[in-house]
Image 1 (cartoon, rainbow, N blue to C red):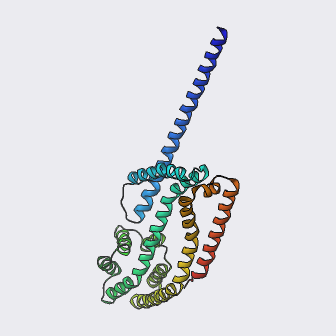
Image 2: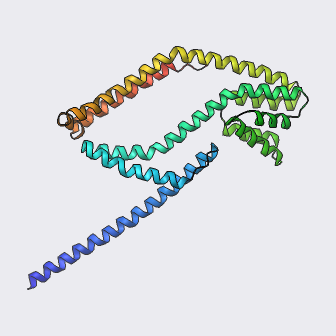
Image 3: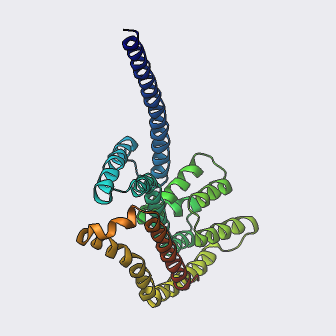
Amino acid sequence: MSSQLMILVISLSVLGMITILAYMFLAVSKKIKAKYQESFERTASANLADMFLFVDSSQLYMMNMVALAVTPFLLYLLTTSVILTILGCAAVIATPNLVFKMLRERRLKQFEEQLSDALVMLSGSMRAGASFAIALESVVQSTYPPLSQEFELLLRQIRMGVDFDTALMNIVQRVPVKDFQLAVAAIRISREVGGNLGEILDSLSETIREKQTMEGKIRSLTAQGKVQGYVMTALPLILMGVLFFIEPEGMKPLVSSLVGFATLGLVSIMLMLGYFFISRITNIDV
């Protein structure tokens, strides 16, 4: 009887410990989820607002959570590898920031391509006798995003009483494009020491246009090398994925043994080094 009582006490104790640990795990998980959601939505809202993309960040968070739930399941189903499943989760978590960075870089590139024509329009309006604010408004009405959005923000700041130089520097911080920094520097110097701002902007616009033409020629000449870099990096990964479907048993040691993980790590390092060197060779700064 005493032994049965002892077993009952031990069983209840173990059950109680399991319950407490489960409660603690759920509580900690809830806090981590809340912090991750807050951080994700705050970062998403800030990045999207900077690009004038007004999307509900909570919907993006839900999409990210769905991907975070589905991706590990599919990875484990295909590879039965815990490490690859964890790496997949890390990739899903990192993807939103990479997407925001890619969108921002594309936006800056579009702004840079529009800048030359915008400076010509700004110069033409000022030559016709318009003030800088009126000329800027004319550019806003005649151009397309993202340049029109950024210039409209500059115009609003000036109308709200923000110091002119401060408003210019605020836009420079939002749009860190070298050509635009040169244009802002020319405008500020012209206001301080005088001079024909229209001629300065025309000259700067012509310089930017020639630079963009040269960059286009360089991109054409280096396009083949860049494609080779992409193919060289992607082909082994695609081949490995095909072999996983064709011969899963033969490829299984690659994701289930220490030697296999070491091989994957070495291959990944070599692929990244190869892509890095090809990118350095084909990336010519004008």
